[in-house]
Image 1 (spheres, helix red, strand yellow):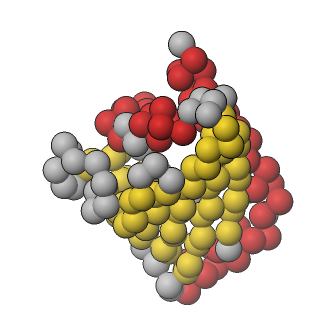
Image 2 (cartoon, rainbow, N blue to C red):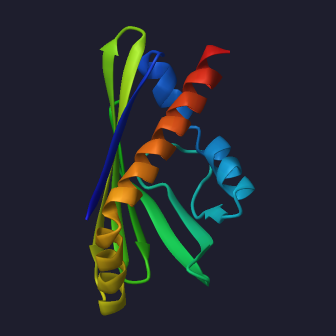
Length: 153
């Protein structure tokens, strides 16, 4: 199953890339939302191989996820691989310079179940895909708007 979204931001590519690779700031935002996140390797380096462990509640249960930045091609693309139980996800973040002052961010997340319970979860997500995609795109638009506002002032 795939979820896709893309948004345009009124900011140069290099500034957008710098902001979305500010992982310490992103970690603080995630912590404020009640998700436990901890970097599992050197916090000083930004690039391929960065990894995190996250803990969160989903459907009444506490879950954990291992997340790794598996591909890093500055300033165009980042690919994150994550595993939570029997569910694997691959999230690709693409940045494209539309002009000197405009950047397009594209996010594609692909879910791959590896166990029966993960298959059941993905099947239930597929049944609700319309609403899920709508929320995903709405959340992406909100995040892009926040990013644009931060970069403006």
